[in-house]
Amino acid sequence: MTTAARQKAHRLGHTAEWRAVWRLRLAGFSILARRYKTRLGEIDIVARRGDLLIFVEVKARGDLLVAVDALGNRQFGRVSRAASLFLARHPRYAASSVRFDAVVVSGPLWRQLWPRHLPDVWRAPE
Image (cartoon, rainbow, N blue to C red; front, side, top):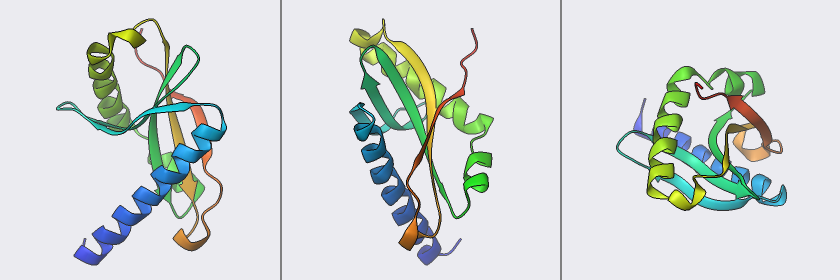
């Protein structure tokens, strides 16, 4: 991937995350963290509404189905490992219900569609 292509992908990712944050805020969520980085992985967005705590992966692609297909086990592993550390570092959320969601943004950068919030896309092993 060229430097210009990387920069374009980076801008697209930031724009998608910004849109995802506003999508979640309008749905009543408080944003606790963005780009939460740990040694075990990264979470794009951590949000809370009532006693529900969600860990969100954001995907931006030109096509909705391609964005959904990009939500694989690799991403879930990264998000779930980071979520475990988040909960360990923030014990006040230990009693919260936890869910793993995704927000997908599709369409060309200049006319992206409204972000789609996909609740409960992954399940942590019991």
